Image (cartoon, rainbow, N blue to C red; front, top):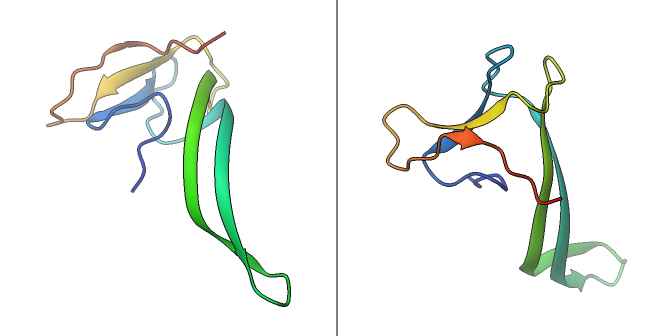
Length: 90
């Protein structure tokens, strides 16, 4: 399982406007280098991936559309503190 951009292990997003914990639109810009392996028919798959930069622009609640009410909170019984507003890079 992958931890989404803007979160650390043991944290998750929560919309304070509607209570949503599971559905968010996450807007990012990413710079990635990928090694593609193509077969002779032209079908490919990524064998290596190096992420060099990721910018988080916004986290928007899919249920109510709020941008300002989305918070980073601890997962119950999580080990990482992280409450506070989402801070996208502008």
